[in-house]
Amino acid sequence: MNLPPFELERYFAVHEFTAKRLLCVSDCQPLTVAELLALSEGAAEAFAALPLGYADSRGGPELRQAVCSLYDSLRPDDLLVHVGAEEAIFTFFSALVAPGDQVIVQTPCYRSLRDVPAALGATVVEWPGRQENGWIPDLGFLKKALREKTRAVVVNFPHNPTGAMPDAGTFREIARLCDAAGAVLFSDEVYRFLEYDPADRLPAACDISDTAVSLGVMSKSFGLAGLRVGWAATRNARLLAAMARIKDYTTICGSPATEFLAALAITNREQVLGRTRKITLENLATARDFMSRRADRFAWAGPKAGPIAFPRLTGDGDAAAFTERLLAATGALLLPGRVYGHYPSHFRLGFGRAGFAEGLAVVDAFLDKA
Image (cartoon, rainbow, N blue to C red; front, side, top):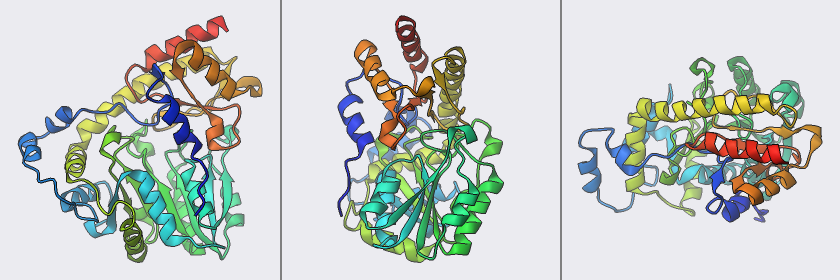
């Protein structure tokens, strides 16, 4: 298996912990351990008494029961907990894809969704969204692209990096087309529950298809990236068992400490999600104002969910050069679109953390001098 360099992760490895102002991160403002434990009476004492042995390789029963509450039709046996979402992406493709298979992937995308199946020998067909269409990929393209050898169709809603989201009817039609073609729908749902209008929330893919896989994680909407807890949710028992066999060769199991905290956060999700939603919506208003005032420099399709967007420089400017100049002059970090593929004029803007307004003011001042 020959995986290419993961440009996004390499970029953050260089800059994330040295830049003064992070204006492109994909997660939300993290909670502290103390804040989490304060959500439930007796949680601090239970956490302190927790034995730090091995965890259940499927994920602890308390955590899987809590995760089930996020779905309409799942039982704990329909879940496989992973160390973050990235491991679940790896085990899914490793369990399903062989050389000669076809995988259709919505783009732009988090690169492992495309690069892992390609490294396993699959033919990857990119299913592109476009800014002028609100980044929603065309159903007609999918209908033509599906083949007998299509093993999986990969979608991500709410979308990274654009914040795009289709209507429920479009999403259900994607699931129907996959079922009819015998392809597994792999639905990256890590930003679910952070819709600006909760009425826009899509059903989970695993609830509307017997074979689909929904990807979840604590890192994004819950603001708990440091827990490194993710999961695959599906009623496709054979596929889930195959993923579990792959996981025996990666992490085997997670940590009982982080699983305890994850279950606690999910059980108290109204408070946790309400907090991240408040921060994100306040910062979104700031971002919308900025984009309106700076329409001569930037354009975007406004996001509908999540803490990120994918603006572009007007006039097809070089976003990589712009982000480099900005970082050198101000210490403010934006993510150039090249890490997602051929998006040279785009950059990722992240507005899920505290301090975003102050950071964007620095960008405003930089533009005034440029």
